[in-house]
Amino acid sequence: MYTASDLRKGLRLKMDNEPYIIVEFNFVKPGKGQALYRCKLKNMITGSQFERSFRSVDTFEPADLREKKMQYLYKEGNKYCFMDNENYEQIYLTEDQVGDAKNFLIDNLDVEILLFEDRPIGLSLPNFVDFIVTEAEPWAKGDTVSGTTKPVKVQTGYTIQVPTFISEGEKIRVDTRTGEYLTRVKG
Amino acid sequence: MSALYDDDNLCLTQKKQILNLRAKLIHSIRSHFIKHDFLEVETPLRIPSPAPEEHIEAIPSGNWFLQTSPEIYMKRLLAAGYPRIFQISKCFRAGERGNKHLPEYTMLEWYVSGFNYFRLMAQCEEILKAVFTDMGHAECISWQDRKIVLNSPWEKITVADAFARHAKISCTEAIDKNQFEEVMVDFIEPNLGINRPTFLYDYPVEHAALAKRNLGHPDVAERFELYIGALEIANGFSELTDANEQKQRFEKALAARAKKKWAQYTMPEKFLSSLKNIPESAGIALGIDRLVMVLANTDCIDDVVTFTPEML
Image (cartoon, rainbow over all chains, first blue to last red; front, side, top):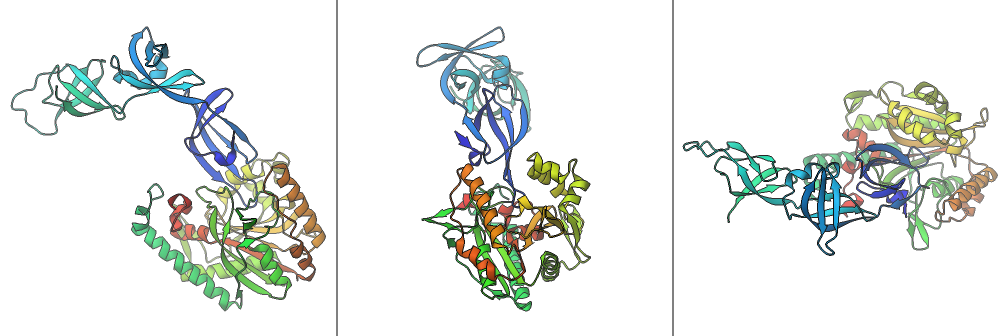
């Protein structure tokens, strides 16, 4: 059980049977009055946000959240299938739950699945993922202007800006937090 | 600035400027109190039990506590025949951490025998005007995007009038609905001390644990707060000198604290018995850190101290 004095940015609570994360927090206390703990809370399943202030007498239940390493297997309709590496059980996330991470989900990628009371609700990607370039315009000889980039497609269908010397079939490393090209990978 | 970690923060030119400002301010305050014939005193920081207040929690120190304010010992000095005293000391309050709160902060507190809260407001205004002048702000000070005029008479407004002017519900209604603090924070405070410093006065008795009741209006206590740039700077009042009423208020606060399962304080009996000798007087506590915030034009208290608890 948490009390109001435990509240801080990033704390995860269970309210009305759903997990919430505190995205903004401020402590205010006018004069000799009661302290107010002002929070902006984000629902970790729906993403909806709301503001509420709490008092020092309020108590909160922690949200039972944990991460588990799983492997991405395939997409079926608008569902994404992952396999638990320990017990080979399969779980599914919806397109909404996967969000922008879908651009980086290559077959057999190890990801962390976020579980709320053992129910999968989201995932986090490794910071760096290596892709194969599946479509790229050939490098025009003589185009030596530094700093220029061109768009290429990778195996997930995601389009990314890379340096002009990258060609089809090459392997590139991408930072999944920014979605940006980092380096060419040999071999 | 507050996003930086560790001592990188202390290397910044802006930080150095603010700490210089702070030192100069404390020097100026001290010199004006001495000029006004005040005696500087030091009372113990570590005490057996703070004055019981419902919404202020002390930090334990062994079997005792760190002071939440020097109030009860300064009043014992008043009762013992020290008519004009001031103190600049550290105060400690558990769980208070925000943009405008630190659990350890610096308070200027002064008491004047023979004064009521109106004379104290006038003296507070006079001394602070002199201090602002020392700091290079004789006429006005920039606050956020505006200018706060300092050299004309400061505004005075009662709590009831401030609710009528700025809030959708009356002060009484807000207390009945247990919304006094929310309305204060959201609708009243943002409007106070914006064009010139504002004294908000005549607080509901429930919000003034150690202040004297107003004889003409027994529902309000002779308490005031000074606001500059929407920031609460100081809290003062005509001292309650009736030991019986003081004891009843302490008992009420102790009961409320017990209900919340907060630390149990003992009844400050020595303080209560000293009240029979206390003259009519008024006292005020002023947050030094908050005043530095105004002078430095910042809305984050982290900017005005050497180290925050997180940096230790």
